[in-house]
Image 1 (cartoon, rainbow, N blue to C red):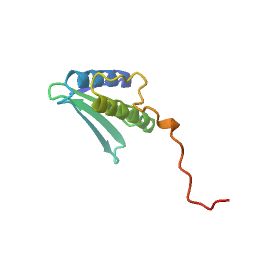
Image 2: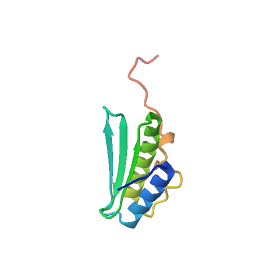
Image 3: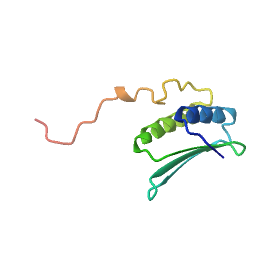
Image 4: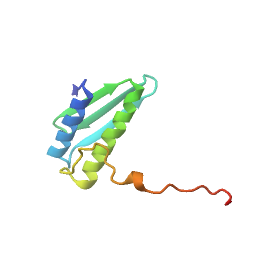
Length: 103
């Protein structure tokens, strides 16, 4: 097992690992509240990449990685992930109005 200290390197190598063998690659998140540690693991049974953090602000980075993997899993390993968000037109949808009184 390899703990990678750089977030960007972890993301790049994880995406490469998934694109090399999408059928057997797994992505696991583990959070221990008592320690306040988050461990992310990507493996394909031959190579195992791990990233460990105790910083709360890195949760946003984890969400970004989730969206990258969701994009790769749903659109295929050759999908474009250059924007890093994995969402298409989510911002253009109209907001729902409340159930309050009409005036």
